[in-house]
Length: 290
Image 1 (tube, helix red, strand yellow):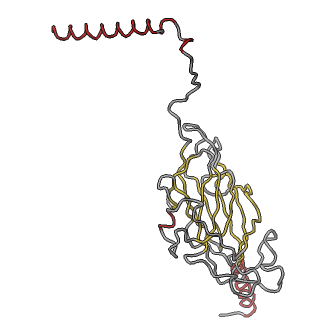
Image 2: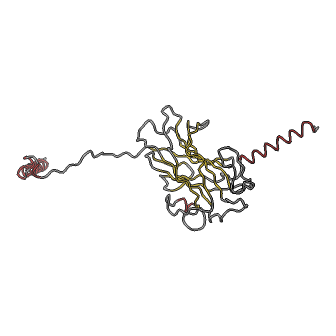
Image 3: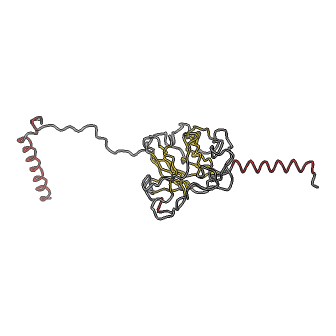
């Protein structure tokens, strides 16, 4: 039987929990894949990609999405208001997301992972200019045909903050926290229309330099994640060492003819060639007599 004495406080607690969940998981929502540049496939992909640890920068692309919850500050480090000029207003077109990178492996050697991130941008997902976002866009080389989206703001709250990990095959990750707002006057409408094909977040991450065969190669797959709206989207990488040069040329010095040893002057060279010819003739005679 329902008891008002017990039921009302219980109902209130449930409503508070639901409200808190709505606040915590509001606004931006990670519903699409995180696509990273795959060296083997030579395109953006979200399966098991290949990466070489030689100090270069790897590009990432993620289509943004929003839910119907209004932005409310849930962490003192986050912006207090979606629109500081109108603090009494808020919008569903603003929110916070995290970009996390595996930084230190949990193997005994503590192999290094992603070093830092940069170039955080809002861009049009459509990269080949045909008005949609499909597999053809993923094959366009990084940082080519990039159309920046100027109808919103992207603010970096924390950059590459080293954070201990409780799960996964890593001890530490570096996390960049970002605030995005596409309705900066909080009138309920995005400042400008989202580009055809969708709005994407673009960034780059730096690999460490590790030689082939080094014991510091990553033990398992290294991961990159985007978290927003209570969900995570990840992409895994299989780590390769740095390319190996088969032969290393220590020095190459040309010497003038005058510096050649006497045995390699013209008479000496002719004698060597003559001896070689005689040897070949003798070998032929012996072969024919068998």
